[in-house]
Image (cartoon, rainbow over the protein chains, first blue to last red):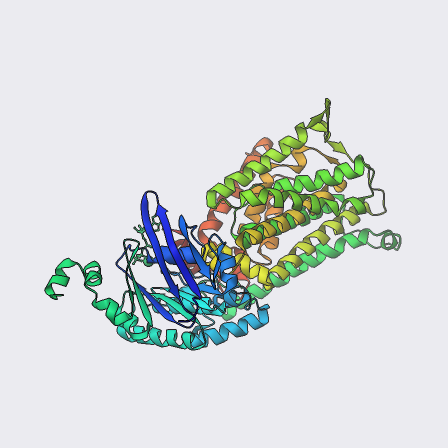
Length: 250
Length: 366
Ligand SMILES: Nc1ncnc2c1ncn2[C@@H]1O[C@H](COP(=O)(O)OP(=O)(O)OP(=O)(O)O)[C@@H](O)[C@H]1O
Ligand SMILES: [Mg+2]
């Protein structure tokens, strides 16, 4: 197996007395699409916040290409080439779609940091990739929810990440939109980006992920090949409730 | 860049009005800029009519000063979205830097003047680091506190029983002796205003400007996209402070006398914010338009203009109160009905109409 691009070691995060993450460890080799699933409140978003520097860890370590990046400010994590989206979209409301994407190219990873003119060109490329090219000139307030999620991805991709963390970019989409979003993820992945994706939609996990990890109450419940993981009885219990697991006779 | 959230296609009639307004504004500004030149000795001895008297110079110079204050505030309050309520501290620090260097160290004005923005920026960078960690109301209140505290400290600092900065007596500067003194200070202040607008123009086009607006719109998203939010906020704060300090420095020599009251007036904090908001916070020319309009209005209402309203039933000591009330009402109406400032009507995007006001009301209410 290739050396890990991203590695978490015993990552712990507490809110008050409650451990939202309790000794989470896993590693992601470069080029993979790595899925994270888990019931509501399992700690998935908290995990992304710990990787991207939004939260400080209460324990453990995050390694990027073998070196610790725990405790780095978010913009320094972004500079390494780690991009992310937010589950609750956070667009820059007064800007157009194109300007939103351009901010990613103006800042982002050390390779991005383009001067304004090129940043806008890069923004146009990225909007093309996520299927928002026709709406570039619109104010973001005019976008539908699925389009806002696309924009969230576009902004992160515009930062030229080597690793992209996607937090439920397909939640709330209808099946057709999910298919489009899957295409988008594959297209981004095809440009050579490692992807860690949080998703509730099983079809997505099975459809695109090389590996999947199940979080439950802040702990790793299972990790492995997506189909195998989803058949795990503990996972079915955690996810769909004990009753459903019994009905399935698992 | 800050496009209106909702846009209406201007009608032919609307466009004609807008053109008329722009033309009028242009003529007023041009007159304002050029009329003072008629006071030049060469033109006077050639029998040219004097188009600007002493009072006019005072008002025009002060207007330019408020253009600096409002436009500089705009960098922090408008672009970055941090409601700084204590910017008058930078004005005062600039004034006292210039004042001390000229009156005590006997520096010439043009050597002392560049140090005023430097001192203000340095102070802003120092207090900015802890202050800008605070968000929303906390930042507003804390910055107000700094604004008040600096004036008090400067007035009251003593060393071996003698006040360091002139104490409550203040500082007297030697009169700057030069021909056409009024004209010199007028153009110095207009130059500072032009510099402030120019800096804003550059900022709006740059990576820095996009970073600031990203911070205003969503600080967390800006951070994970790679914006060094702390550095950017402090830089914007220091830049605003430098420009404000420059105006303070010019004021010190212009006014010849400075004390806590005239260079740390608390009401300036409110006035510069009002000007930026009424004109259009976050825009290039909004604060300029707001400063010119509101300063004239304030002077008119308080009876300092040659033209003034004479209300027989209004005792003269009630004038300032009336001025405050009208200003307050104006702010209220602006914030609720024209949240993007009056400049919004001149960008070719929106037109003043009942529908616009109704939409604004919907936008600004819960
Ligand atoms: N900032 C915070 N302060 C306090 N508690 C928090 C905070 N963020 C998360 N939590 C708590 O930590 C736990 C994990 O939350 P998290 O948002 O990571 O879950 P999640 O797996 O992303 O859930 P969902 O599927 O609903 O998005 C929850 O119990 C949540 O209430
Ligand atoms: Mg979540």
